[in-house]
Image (cartoon, rainbow, N blue to C red; front, side, top):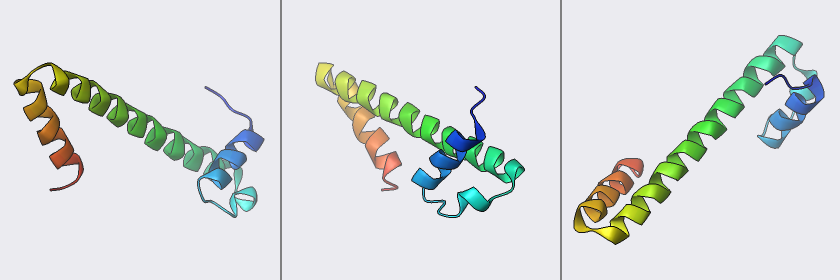
Length: 76
């Protein structure tokens, strides 16, 4: 999806890039794509964890999988 340059700068600033309005145009495009990719990955991880949490309620195998998933996500 193509976004306007202004929207991309706003996205970067919301993600902690305080000087994004001074970035060269190419850098704005690339950094914004990194932000979107990272956000999408976070949403996918949350969806997987939510699905696993639901499965953990249903049976013991699901509970074991959920416990392993959380352990892996927390590096523990």
